[in-house]
Length: 281
Image (cartoon, rainbow, N blue to C red; front, side):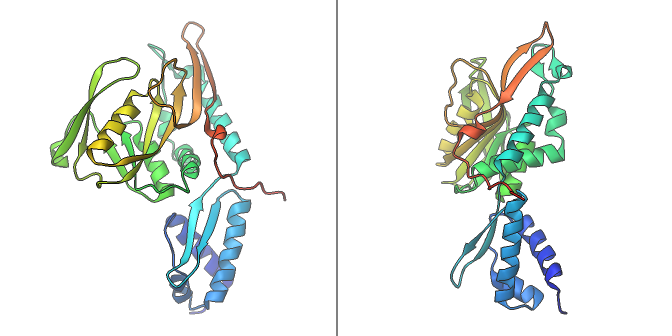
């Protein structure tokens, strides 16, 4: 069957988007469409240009007999700023206020489009790093972790507060909460994480950083290392246990009496992120 170029490009685009951070051999596409590798290379050049212009991502070509092409999710700075500004506006809605100064966030964490974009922004920040797994603590960090993992094409490891019989042998540690100073437990199945893994730690909301610090201690039990720390919302906090992290949003203040929430962008744009160039057309 003979495929038109438009058909090849559509199919290759879909395949690459479904397999981020995976080396795809040009031979696979050549055999898939019965086309010469030179034609496939021309198609990929078109896809790469379009991806970068539209803020979708980029393609990296790996030369040599064992080479191929990899798709990386990336964003341009303008679209990232627009998304985070909109996220701040949504979080500032006074209807989110709960007793005790807490904020209702489940509608955002449960929204596929929002979580996909959160995942894309945070994955873009770590696109050039070696990451073997994403780790978070149940339960609200799970959708963020899965969103990032989908763009980095790595598994998610979920830490729990207590052990489950269905998880088999576990490793547990005690840690001190950064905000309440209470001693709490963390449990992870021994089968969840390979020894020596490089792990991206994820949290939905960070105050003192105790939860992240606990995960770092847990990684030590697996001889694993921290590849990075990604946070959706960080709170204004005087003494934090964690310094090196990336956040999308910063919660400056919550005034229950006046039903006011003050939110600004996090430190995302102060980090050395390789943004795509803006489309000048």
